[in-house]
Picture 1 (tube, rainbow, N blue to C red):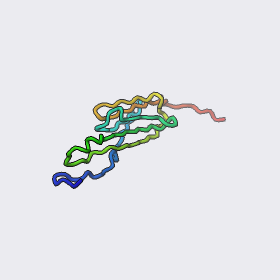
Picture 2 (cartoon, rainbow, N blue to C red):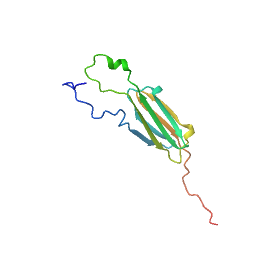
Picture 3 (tube, rainbow, N blue to C red):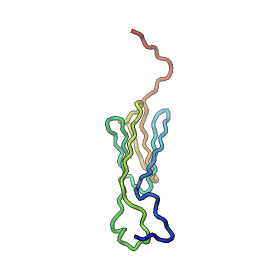
Picture 4 (cartoon, rainbow, N blue to C red):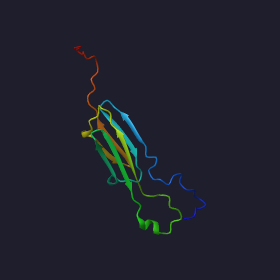
Length: 124
């Protein structure tokens, strides 16, 4: 398709190439947020692998009939992304909760109780 004089091509033709994760740690959980505009929750999968690897997969399909109409410019495309995060040892991965709202995926992984203070270690 020839370039339209009012539009320039997108900097990258690879969808989701810049899918970024925000990660914060609270006293009770690790919280991950990912912007996934245009995706529905049915197009996103969250898996736990090997007990400590959080794997986020998303896939967007562009319907072929959309491409057959008389569009002047088509930059949106379908594609797939996969992001993996190794969870810290204080995580409780089997209690993970994920929800999607307004194109933002939020994942909460509870943390084990962290014991503060001094612990006496016997020397043998």
